[in-house]
Each structure stands twice: as structure tokens, then as C-alpha cells.
Length: 110
Length: 114
Image 1 (cartoon, rainbow over the protein chains, first blue to last red):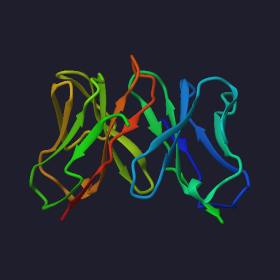
Image 2: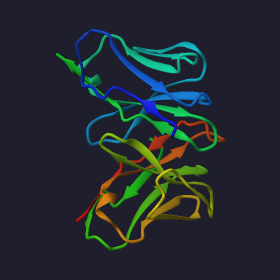
Image 3: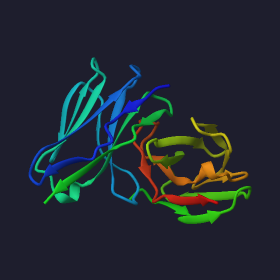
């Protein structure tokens, strides 16, 4: 069974700090990776994707991928209370297989 | 906004009754998906469609069927609802040509089976 693992949290950080969210995956055939943000009672919203090893930055968000270690992370700089949500990591192996982790709850304290 | 609407948004039903959830999209996307989301399990794929009348099973398809008779509508049917099918159901589309793994989700349908 191919899996994506995340710490369920909650991860609590003070406002203005860097939040670091981590994810591991088991399928070495995974080609691309995604981070979704989900506010309570709402649908998941795509915030970042990454295909290549290394870092990808978009505003306050940086996605990091290490295929050798099968590890994906999301850094949120200058965390704001509005970033408080559950963050879902997902891997795509091609075809129609996108596997989601169960999510990490992030709480940013004002 | 990917132009996806789901109906009904909330439904309570009894064990053994059939239930149909509807996903409607307005932007002519080819690929559509039904996921369910349960605490501790993340999102799990039920069925997907890659065109009109072209559908296939996902990882948790038992007890569910789907139909897609036109591009804009993807229906999920629980033939005889069970309590284990109490969940939040999300419809999703892939916005790009081909399936790249990027997904945009509808608002969700919360189903309670008593």
C-alpha cells in the first residue's frame, strides 16, 4: 500500500515565526508533490506543487523535495493567524493516482 | 474558482437507502474525481472519470457507482447506504490537459447515514 505520512499535529507556532511541515512518501515512482491547505469545514485548496529536487518558493511559502530521502516539506515564513489550517501533502505517481496524507494541523498564535 | 458545485451539501439518510451526490462543473474539464475524507485517513479516491461515459475505480470503490453522461456532470451513487459511508465527499477536477495531479475541489457534501 503506497502511503504518504504526516504528523497530525497540532503544530503550534507564534505569529511571525517559520512553520515547518513535513511529509514522507513510500512510492519511489512518485513524480510530483502537492501541498493543500484546508480550513475547518472547507475544501482543500492547492497552494504549492513541486516536481524537482530542491526548493521552490512562492511568496511566504517554500516547498522542499528530497527524492533520495522520499521527503517533502513546506515552510511558511512570517506565519500569520490566518495560516491556521490543516495542511495536506499529496504525491502523484502518474495516471490517476494522487495519494494524500492525513494532514498536519497548524495553529499560529497571535 | 474552478466552477465546481456539489449537491446536496448536507444529507442525512437511513441505512439501506440509495443516495446520489451530484458534481457539476462549468469549464469543460475532462477529468473529474470523487474523494471521501475521514478523520485520520486523508482524502481517498472513490471513482474518477476521464471523459463522457469513461469512468474507473479508485482505492475505495466498493459500495459506490458513478455515471457521467455529459461533460459537466459526474454523479456518485451509494446503492445501499451504510453507516461506514458517513463521510464528507469531495468532487475534484484536474484543470490542465492530461492529469498532472493538480486538483481543484468542490465545496464538499457531508453525508450522515443513520
